[in-house]
Length: 260
Image (cartoon, rainbow, N blue to C red):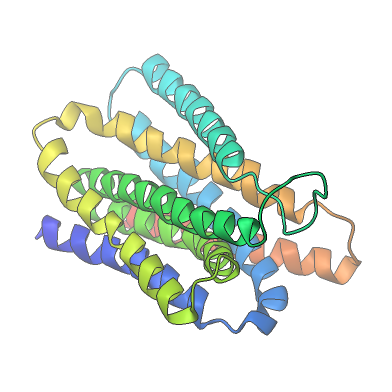
């Protein structure tokens, strides 16, 4: 039954985020994306600090080792993002007049960038699947909360990826198809995680902390900086309400678990 839940959760997390991202009309992105970013940040921080980390530390594993894992995870994702920023560095057609590239060179580079995005996203989704499996093997409710957090941070990312693929020359149908295919990597990671992690239960707390390091880094380094800009009081209040909604959702789930 646990394997079925893992497959369903990773399938939902991998495909739902892609479908939501592609279903939103481009003209609505400007209005909806800031709300999704705020909500996602709240869900990620709430899941990490209020649900998953306490579960890991209550397992009885050595706290110093768990904190070291958290630190190592944060540094790993920092370096991974640096590598991605370097790999995705590009320029637009004609913005460097001294570059003697043939006409259409930048379009070719954009196309390659699109495939690079898909490969990197597939790897990311695969790792999310493994971490979701680790959460389910610890506790089914924890697994669903983790799957929710994964989906929450995937939606804004998939919106960005979808736009990048369109700009890289993909048709809307192809962008949706390849993005969905990339999302299925989460299912592969979940199934592999179920069979690979099962015999090594002692590693589960450390995998949960690794998941938290991913969530915390995405929230603090990627999402919250997007919210740190001058804006009218009304927009600031809206931002805080959506952030609070994400935290409140996790608090309700956590409270329901401790009530049983």
